[in-house]
Image 1 (spheres, each protein chain N blue to C red):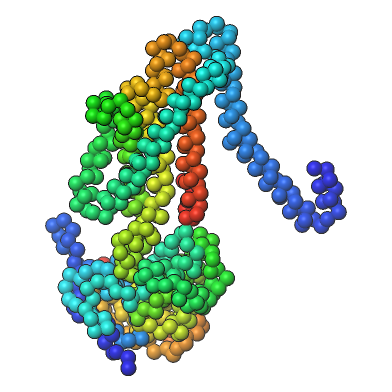
Image 2: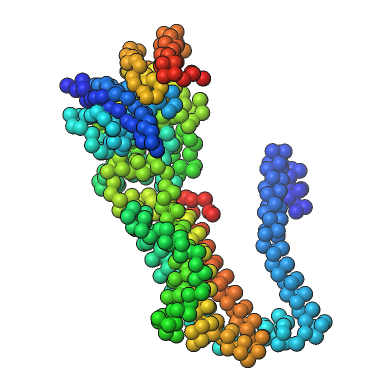
Length: 263
Length: 282
């Protein structure tokens, strides 16, 4: 039975003290995420969406409010979380396979027992022939695919992704979205995906949370009802375009409210 | 060369173009070898020849400036004396370097991990960097006497700072997301140090070590100057008191050779380690 409130974010806020002034990055955000749901957090750069994700991951304390995941308040990082960052952050001296097994070593488990899973994951993202290559021998997209496998190796319950494809070119980015969607079908985790790409947010997610400009709140909670598995051609359909346009207007309105131009 | 040309005629054009490309690349490699290896060596030889000729031509007395050939002769005639003193200098420099490197890395790691220790020590270390440490050398004789302890301690003392500073820079140079990933996996500081921080720091550690090895030699030679008990530095001082300029230059030539060799070893270790760790060579 899937928990409808696997993630419970309650009135979470984040303020930074900068000199004599307080900067409010995130203001009273509240939402729930059901187990197994893939949620995109969409917003313009600098709207505090990454901060929100880091608070969920336990890597950044919240100034106010509570976050509960799997029924327990988040007070620090947990091993049931898988993390993917903007840069692949692979160890340059390790092969793809060793990089994928890195979390296993950090958790002091036996890498030999996970080797098969690591090879299978790398195979699934099309890196079956690159197991023993070092990051410098891989393209940017390949490196980020290794990072996806690394985040999944210990079978986490929750995958948190902080703009994982924003450093990639547009063509690679589409490929990565398809690769992530494909691996998602087989691994079905709860997912939090932070992005500033509307297309990406809609294509991947069951639900899109639109964050407004600073101090950010959730401006819109939108259910994406396209059937899974999703075909790459989905992005060319009129319905897809309509949703994207609507989300774009919401973001712009959010900007207008916070008194900034939507340049 | 001609038979390659003949073979190319018989082959298809793509193959002959390939061969031409390979030949061009080989030629470029040779040209680069000439430019970066042969040319500097030829320049050095030319300077030595000029020196030799100038001394001969102007009848400069040996006590002022002996010719390179005189120095070479002297190196051969006092080879046993040079050897014994060179061994002493080399051993102490290597020992000083090894101790400085170990201490430097350990101190750098402690400073990176303890914010209190860092606050207490780091500004003072930087301040100490600025002191002309050679001025402190006589104090070591007061404290430790005129034996090897004094020279070794002084060598460690001056070669240790570059290692500390470089290692701290390296250890704090790890991408923030990499550390966030490790913290997310609830890895211990000890694990993060060995699996991530230290390997990331290696290029910096080696650049510190390359400075340290030259400083260690300087430290030992300065130590030998003032402890006046053994080593090439002592030999130089001794020869200077007898106005034996040729012996001074012979000892200096040996010191240069030792310096080059030790620096070469550190550079070689750097190349091998950085290659193994996938870093681009500095």
